Amino acid sequence: MPEDSVNVDPRVAVYAGSFDPPTHGHLDLILRASLRFDTVYVGIGNNSAKSPFFLPGERKILLELICKGISNVKIEIFSGLLVKYCEQVQAGIIIRGLRSVSDFEVELGIAHVNAQQDRGIETFFLAARPEHAFISSSVARELARHGGNLEYYVHPEVATAMKKKASG
Image (tube, rainbow, N blue to C red; front, side, top):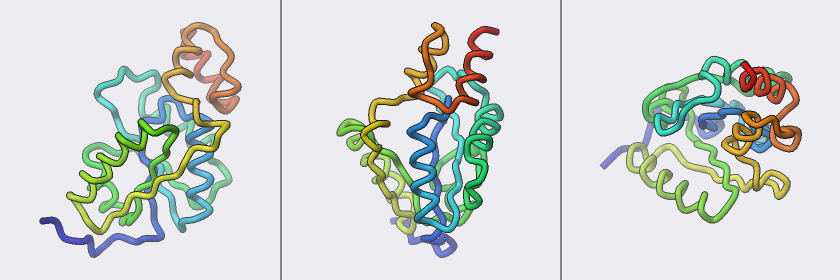
């Protein structure tokens, strides 16, 4: 049975994902979390089940660009278990966004696994705002590949990078 972490802080949160690309929905959750926690680490992970559009370093640059001015947000790339990353940065909270009931079912299972690994780290779920509930990185990638309008999905700087990447 895992023990509670002794070195995590409930005022420090991690919002992890692939962010490929970072969307308006991601930015909204980052902003909302930054208002509630002293420090929010945006952890860029690698989903081996997906073919990346942007490399992790490119995603980091894009997130830093769209999060500039949010002083308590730190953007980092990590690998391995999310719980281990949380322990490394001493985060007591994992932030997860929910767009739908199916997201909840998946995320609840992941939260249970994380709790089994370290009971001292809690998962907080934030519901997507209605205007962001149907935004997904995969749709944004598909639109970019086929010259679609990205305005609804991503920040203008991200849209520019996506168009450049898709055309070259």
